[in-house]
Amino acid sequence: MASTQGAHNILVASNRGPVTYEVQEDGSLRAKRGGGGLVSGLSAIGPDAGALWVCSALGDGDREAVRRGIAEDGVRMLDIDADVHADAYNGIANSVLWFVHHMLYQTPLEPVFDAEFRRQWASYEAYNRAFAEALAAEAAPGAVVIVQDYHLTLVPGMLRELRPDLRIGHFSHTPWAPVDYFRMLPDDIAEQVLRGMLGADRLGFLTQRWADAFTTCCDALVGGLGDTRIGVHGLGADADFLRRRSHEADVADRMATLREQIGEGRRTIVRVDRTELSKNIVRGLLAYRQLLEDHPEWRERVVHVAFAYPSRQDLAVYRDYTAEVQRVATEINDRYGTPDWTPVVLHVKDDFARSLAAYRLADVALVNPIRDGMNLVAKEVPVVSDEGCVLVLSREAGAYEELGEDAVVVNPYDVVGTARALDAALTMPVGERAERTKRLAAAGTALPPAQWFLEQLRELEG
Ligand code: G6P
Image (cartoon, rainbow, N blue to C red; front, side, top):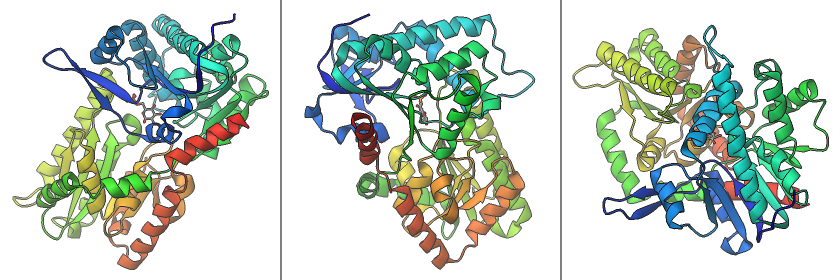
């Protein structure tokens, strides 16, 4: 089927776009720009390059903006039916594909691929088709399209059929599941996901490990990769932006407040995450409790500053997890706290300036995900840290491939082992800590977002 062709030479597609709209009290709409690697990556090619970002309208404000014909330059929001979007995003992307790639299912209750799952899958197909059709309509002849993530696995195949002239890439920001876990998906669905992605000319992953897992799945389930090429692009932190932003006045204000909450002369163990099952926040808290148990000498001398920002709260399992994080933090404070020492300072309201303030103050950064595509916090803290910071890092985070040598590495399931690692981190000599921080900052900023994006573009154009 041929469709009319558009004018854009470079297109990006993702569920969440670079901007959201909020409805103000007077009914007007206020645009809020997001951050993140993709935003700075795309801004690097400049506004005149004919780039277009296709994304979903996510809330009432976004839908209203589409209805009123309001749009930022270079952004096209798709107003996909709200129920279809909810099935695709909450039902399939975040409850099934996210759980498969992060190996989060818990037997005996999960997974169950029942008739409800099949109904939601039809929505996921419709949602992917809406993206493919919009991209087909907007792309100039021979344009480059880079599709993002597990929300949009079927788009490359669908788009290839509509527009064989395009150069299509797909990038996964998540891990890829090992084949024995991936094939929990019903056979026809697993095959559809792989074939959908293989519609691309080139697939990008954050680490060699995830790329290899994908290749293994293709070998086992669909007879190999065919003509599709695979590349690894380890997205790094944006050093220039972080250094500048972390020295602005609002960050200094937050540092003063945090210093008061921590108390004079105490060490600080920092973690900053979305409240996300894969981030393993509860086991992190249990490890901290174990540290206070095994090393009473740290009581009153250390504070765990934990920022756990709510995420995907439409899903009960995320709401329950948020409550569990709060329950365990309170339990530790009740058990060990003294009139002048709060062992865990937990904040749940998202505040980027405060996150940067914590990065600057951290003696130890705890990054202990069960599984993580990359984990940018691990790469950001060493850049921003004022006095050097020891990174306690899960070997299951993608960042481990680049940072493992200079981090204190943990098995994320091992609470006692993580407590030992925290003690080792707190007692590391200052000189060694400074040396390691320097190397971590260099490794973690080796591929800044703009370069990460341009690399992929060049590969597809070449
Ligand atoms: C994390 C993951 C990305 C994913 C994003 C979606 O950043 O690394 O792979 O696209 O979450 O989050 P959201 O809030 O849009 O569900």
